[in-house]
Image 1 (cartoon, rainbow, N blue to C red):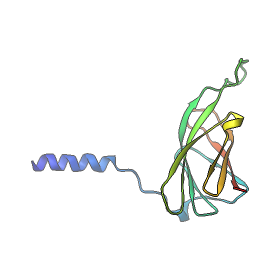
Image 2 (cartoon, helix red, strand yellow):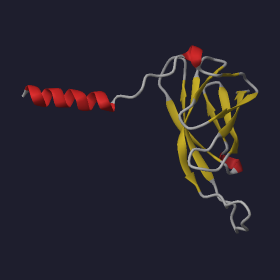
Image 3 (cartoon, rainbow, N blue to C red):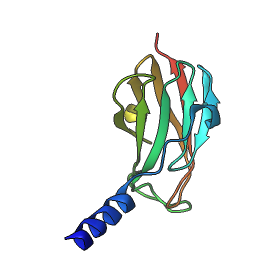
Length: 129
């Protein structure tokens, strides 16, 4: 029984997530500014909330130097965490009508997305009017 308990404890310890980056170590982005993030990176907004680029969800964009009937779309997953309260996950697209999302007192807009498995995303952060 002790062996099973020890194995279970090791398995649970292996499944825990890495500790969050302290706010003092995060890059800060002012209202009206943009920031570049790669998957897994976070930034702190002016109101002490955080934005984290989780991952590339899908990329069906037309490859460079190829003529396509449809330009395609790429989707990234993000997480917004307020200074207090629960985090909120959302997605942004490269398609114009789905590039922006309102979280808390901010609008986050996907300005650019590089190509590749872990593409750098350029996000614009604006105070919500």
